[in-house]
Image (cartoon, rainbow, N blue to C red; front, side, top):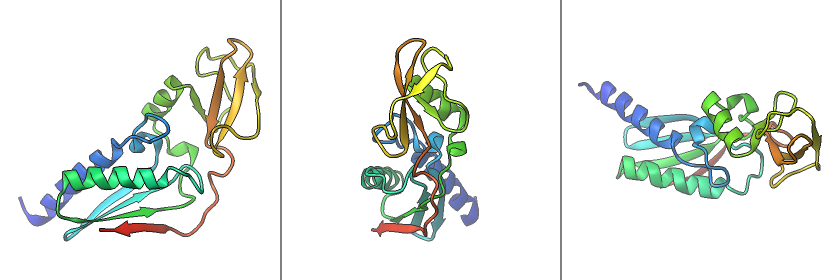
Length: 168
């Protein structure tokens, strides 16, 4: 195997590792949530591009820590740089498996009229402007009475310049 093939193989392995890192707020991998943008390897430096689901997300530090730890375990001894691409995340970035996992956890993804993730009813009422985070809007289902959040709404799509997380 030549050097380029080894680099490609390690990049693929690291992409898989980062995709599996769990979001600290919702039990879903960063790949399925659409947060992982890319992983690149140049020499002994690994660069991971991520897109937060909303501007000012309080979990950015914890996600950075988790990603850095997972990458360091998978490729010890290499420099790691986390680059946050602010404004790059869109509800459409969530994979089909991610939508299923979110629905199972009681969330819906914006982009279609809200339906209850528990019973499928479309007779729902908005319960406020913001849920547990700015990017979530709370709803109540009139069919089964369950509360749920729609993810990917207010504050998720404003574009700013990229912000680089520290490197090691």
